[in-house]
Image (tube, rainbow, N blue to C red; front, side, top):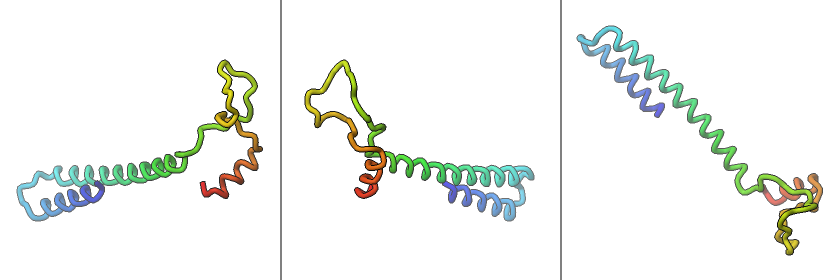
Length: 101
């Protein structure tokens, strides 16, 4: 979209230089608007790239690790189904780094 804004700015400059019956404030206001929209679209592109990378890095990981379960209203009989971490946090981080995450 920033390219479209630059094209519009070129059109405004060309129309102001070629045409004789263009109102005086039209060219200045249109050029200012097209430059500001160009800046706005460039900033939005940077922010959306940043947010996209943040979401990409955070996907596939659990929101939190449970260190232990002491009591629950519904206890799970199968210990393998529990989301309980038995390793220390240091060992857990090292195992994630080795797996490529």
